[in-house]
Amino acid sequence: SADKNDAPKEVYRDRSKERRLLYGDMQPHSTPSHTDVLLAQSQKQTVTEEVRPEETLGTTNVGNRLLQKLGWKCGESLGTNKGGGDGANNLKSDWEKIEALAQAGGRSR
Image 1: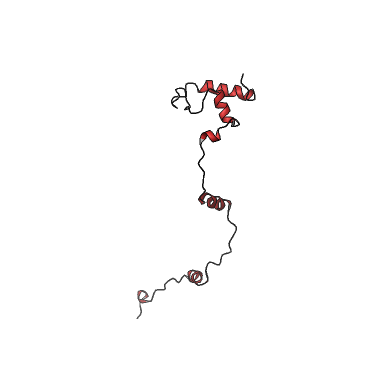
Image 2: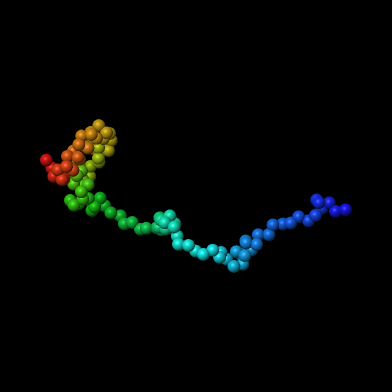
């Protein structure tokens, strides 16, 4: 008499996988999502040219003009000790100067 354990076991046959191997992926290609587009753009390599600060911070640069009105000079570091150190001590007074300049439309008082 044949026992249940002696019966041949069925092996799963992935027919979908076989079809994909024979005919390729048949799914319609949808338009890429916004995330896919951004990811592709971020992976592109871009060439950046080297620009020297004195070429970019001319008299028409608003940030440059504002820093000069606060006492900064080209070639100096930012900060109270001109070494870029502890600028937190004068942060409030610097911010008040910036607000005053903004209210005056960028004109010195």
